Image (tube, rainbow, N blue to C red; front, top):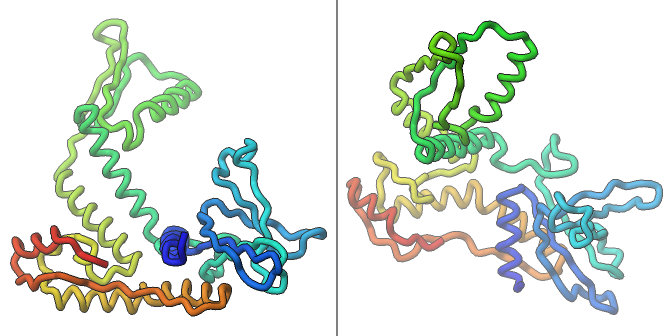
Length: 295
């Protein structure tokens, strides 16, 4: 990879994990850096210092769920030390957080529950569409009261088969000895469920955007009926987003690469190009969202 590609990959990791890592390999004479390689951040684990190793070091594996297999066996690599130019090293960078001593906490961590909720809402609707929609019900058995252990076993088994967004809309299959013992399904009516989902969707969207310091949802292709859609307003919103979020994170990558590699690194800021001025009408604003925005 060239340096532009490496910088892009570092920035991508930085957004996902709030940290990034790359490998440097020195020349044979140890006087310069001969090679720089991006290391996927999820592949890195910190080593624990001990009596034998009192410096920073790391382990690398392409799949830590299979690290016992030969092809995924962890590889030892020393942490960055500018006084030692005899071996390859790993530059490991993470944002400071008093609650993160070993691994970074994602910048958007306060919205992780909302992000998860967004996935479950989508999974719920998808499962309903695939399985056929049925309303929530109370399942009542008329075969007597079982023991506590039997009730616990049944509840665990029932939850495993039918609970969760991925099981939405599944058919419940039961058996009985005659009409008197047949299970009774009592529908639970949900009032204004459609409106609730619409409201919840707006809450999810707002909390996710806020966690990412988004100044204008339109920059990310989200239509806002009350927002103006002119080029100048989008450029102004992007300038604010650049100054409050993008710039400081770009600077973090620039300063680190400059310090380690010994060359001046400057990442290009985002710009909007080739946008026509569009008036504030819903139809024309929607047209703006469909246009290609060059960042």
